[in-house]
Image (cartoon, rainbow, N blue to C red; front, side, top):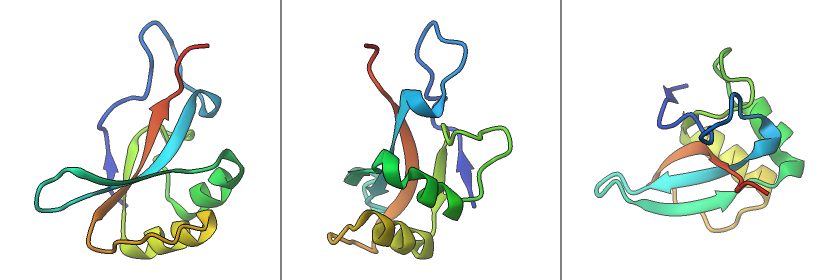
Length: 102
């Protein structure tokens, strides 16, 4: 499993981002253009199941970093979230997005 440190997922002024502060999304990038071509937010109710599939970095227990996913893990995640629009030609990642401050 490849861990990518695209961003910390932390908002300015905060000391720590927790799982409650972020939304997790399955994203797919076109390997030719590197443009975002697919995005599906993971429902909170399914996040535990998704995280059980991924070998998280010990320094990242809340999955704040971006994780590269092979197509087998992506297929499993699609099954968990009930996704029917599938494109196996993309490069997929589990990424986090900070929720806007309330």
